[in-house]
Image 1 (cartoon, rainbow, N blue to C red):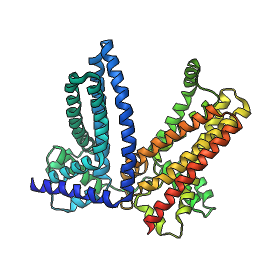
Image 2 (tube, helix red, strand yellow):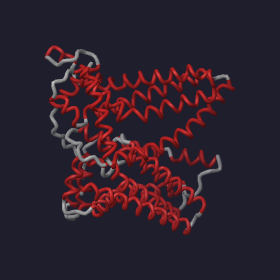
Image 3 (cartoon, rainbow, N blue to C red):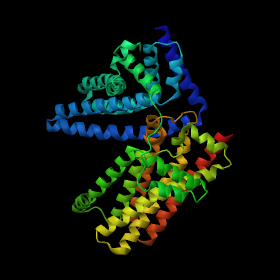
Image 4 (spheres, rainbow, N blue to C red):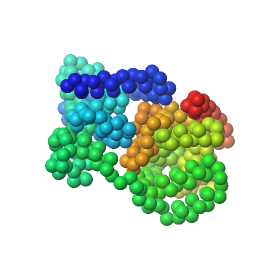
Length: 455
């Protein structure tokens, strides 16, 4: 027990020092706190009104049961993602493997870091908002439901932290390792120990499965000796080798096929308008970024230190990243916007307007992600396994990434309001001014943050 207490105190002290000295963590914590307070204020009121409606309709018990199950499932899934990221994709677990600690101490070290760095604010928001709504709507009668929500959420978070390692053990057929000297038994501590040893023993050589034609495009990009061409070539080859890329492609295609149904539903409600194809295309491009590229600079991990010591200024690096994002995601939004407008029968002029609106909206969004991700930089995390690459490069699993996604959604909403308020040429001019202002502010922030890191 003394060793476990020491591990907890060390993790708490590490987090305290990081929050006191790390500008990236402080900025992310402030952005996350501001966004969380806004969501809590709005969510508690909206959910309280919904609970009151359930009570007046006589269906309170069934809906509250579904609410509790949904909150518990969310806590378990979020805890599972954090356990994988903190337990298998960082240097800490490698360091613990070299220390004379038992499996139980390593498991409690993971739980301590999981509670302090991953679950704290998120679990408080995810469980506290429904509990507050229950108390606001039901008064004292909602107290048992709120207590059940909190207790079940804590249990679900613990089980969610252990579940990935059980699945990994079953997948890799590692349950027989107890006979080969791996300590810990069949409990969560033993399963975590087996997963750590398996991750260290796994062959890290990637399988080179590239998109047909990707090699020709990569050779064509080699002709341009620029940072943007190098980043685009690397991204093209890396993404074409990942199954998650193909999943995003299929998901985007599926969402495009849902556009006719959505447009008819909005038309029946008297909504929609001429900007709908452009906004839908921009939303699909934003979803692509949020799912796999929400932190252009933070996704580099320790590789970013090579960019910072290279003969390349912070502004040049940001411009190269923005160029890549513009080619990929602004191009996606422009193509989809024009295609959806033509599908609606708006003609070439309507397609051109939709493409311009979608491109202007996504230009500011791309600049926001490129510049804002400077607050998500992590110069010590190695990316040496496929699991670490997926978790660190693609999953929006930090407060800064979640905040950037929320701000990008608000920016798209502002573009939609401008399109409804100022149609035509004046509307496009306003869209361009808004995107330019956001881009200049985001890139200036990113330049200052990278310059401080380089010093």
